[in-house]
Length: 161
Image (cartoon, rainbow, N blue to C red; front, side, top):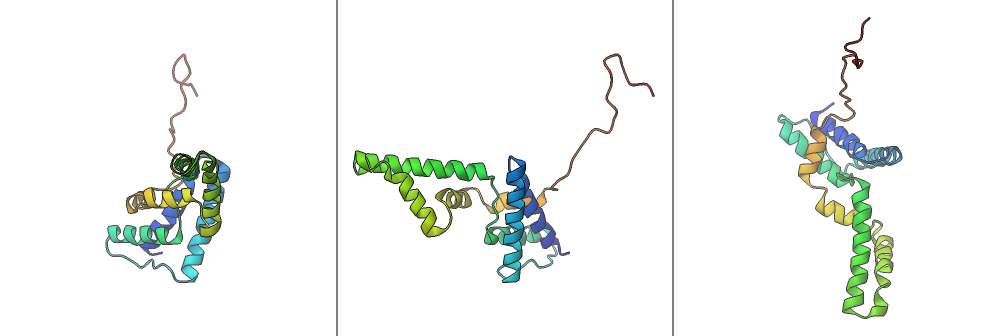
């Protein structure tokens, strides 16, 4: 496996592990794998062997961004979606007329229908899915569990065997 491929896989898994619930982690992992496989089959991305790890991280970050893998968890995208809909509603209420306020959520729904992604997804991609965040995901060791291997002590002192 090339080093850029290894970093790309770490970014896929790391992106799923930042989700807050088990269901969202599984859904994000499956979606990321599908996006990665599709991009590799179409050849939209290239993951060559790099002589320097920083180049491999850059290749992996560019590939993750090209695939549409997210470097932020879905709660941020949902919050940005809500804020955008409310903001558009407030803008229309103040700028156009009081009756135009409910058009904000309708405009957000139209945007999602027209673009195929929500405003929150686009805002999160622009604001949160930076090369720096993808590099941090690629450097992480996904799934590592650090645990204390020492036996627990009882209130009266160390356990006797």
